[in-house]
Image (tube, rainbow, N blue to C red; front, side, top):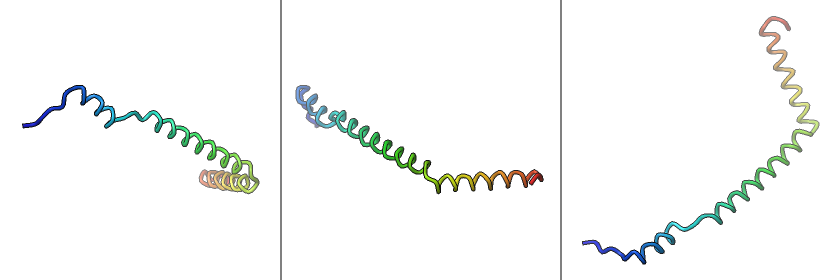
Length: 74
């Protein structure tokens, strides 16, 4: 036979078991925001560097040449 707890004990117990995660969720949002800002800074630095622009230019040149030779124009 199972004993049941009175309702006055069950409600606080449920609250303690499940708890509220508002503080944890806010901290997670803060960490994600900081990580996104850091990644944005790295991407800006990367996209404005000379060597990266040269790599992009060489890739685009290769793609255009490959497309032209595929159609017999290059």
